[in-house]
Length: 89
Image 1 (cartoon, rainbow, N blue to C red):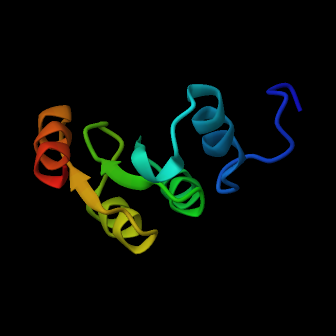
Image 2: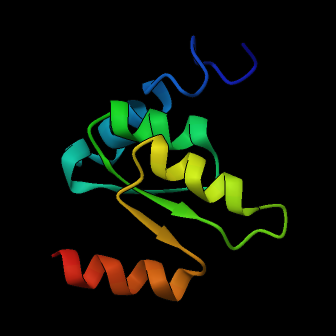
């Protein structure tokens, strides 16, 4: 692989590697994703996951797919992400 990783999302490898390099436990990390495979990877890594729908390509069915993949919160913008994080800590 050109990324140096064996597995792509939805495998949690990229998130687990990032947590390890940051020296932060996965359960203390919030992943912000706009894809089902990204949400699935974050959840599999033991992280909280926010489904971000700010991109113009996101539709209603995508929002439901992010929820179904396990997103802990759906956010339309980064302000909503910040508010959710503040309420969660």
